[in-house]
Length: 168
Picture 1 (cartoon, one colour):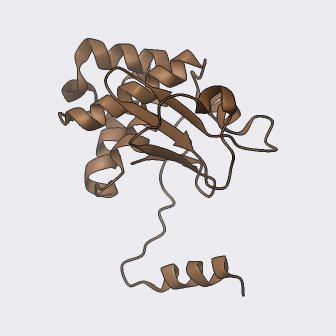
Picture 2 (spheres, one colour; picture 1 turned 135 degrees about the horizontal axis):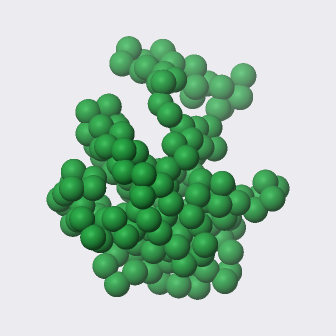
């Protein structure tokens, strides 16, 4: 049994572990994807993050990254995400700005941005006036064209097992 298999077996044996199969992943909605990724660090997913993701999915104009960024700036985080904490809203803004700057408008674009043709995934680093955010994947070397920017205080990771982006 490999180390990964042992860890998986241990996690499955935890009394409070529950597999969640009913999430609408992929969302096909970049506002929901960014909201999910940024909010989930340190928060209860079922009671805090998921209801907000569901609310953002009701805003059709936020389905693309540029649309989400525009709606977030026009209406504010309290109305769009039902959130007021400036740090997480700043991260959402920074991630959306990075994606817009790199032409990432859909989840398909995001997958290609992270993984290219599928042979390898890449790390990206970006800075924003409000916040900085990085997007990385373990054991993958970052693209030098993007990696030269300011090191970030927060990290976003694409989880291959669930195709979810997670930001801390």
